[in-house]
Amino acid sequence: MDENVYKNPEASLENNRAFCRECGHQILITTVTCSKCRATQVTGGKEKVIAALLAIFLGNFGIHRFYLGQWWGVFYLLFFWTLIPGIISLIEGFVFLCTSQETWTRKYSRTKGSSALVLVLVLFFAVVPVLGILAAIAVPAYQQYKENAEQHQIEAKKKNMESEPQLQDFQP
Ligand SMILES: [Zn+2]
Image 1 (tube, rainbow, N blue to C red):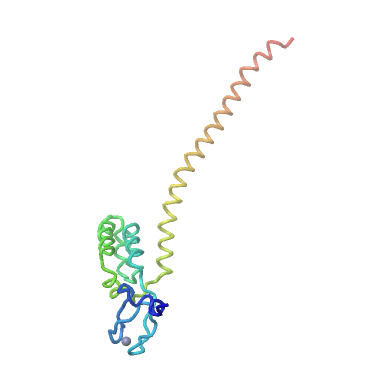
Image 2: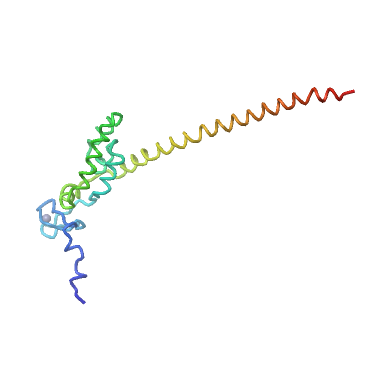
């Protein structure tokens, strides 16, 4: 068999290339130590698609900026109520998607994002609307149930009152 096939499957893929942060030597994204200068690479590269999806769906709150380890996502969060960050991030999302993998890797593969913070924010902004929707369905349903129950009670009372004179009629 041709041993080259098994030697390094990623070697032929330009997409998996990055530059050493110390010497600029081209290395694989997954490389932890540069083969040329032995510098330790910061791992935890950010996925383009994830960043784009965060920008498109939760960009109004700057989640994609936090994901990319950019603190100015705070400004998105501060002005979310104007919906302007949402418009900006929607465009950013598509720009992310249109960015070539090579450029993306060079820009973001070495950024350190606070994943825990992103997770908390994503959960918060995902859970809050769901709870809101559930409340919007559950509260009127409960009120309807209560009204029905009250209606039943009133009807039951009415029946009792109607039947009372009849009972008296039969009394000797
Ligand atoms: Zn290097």
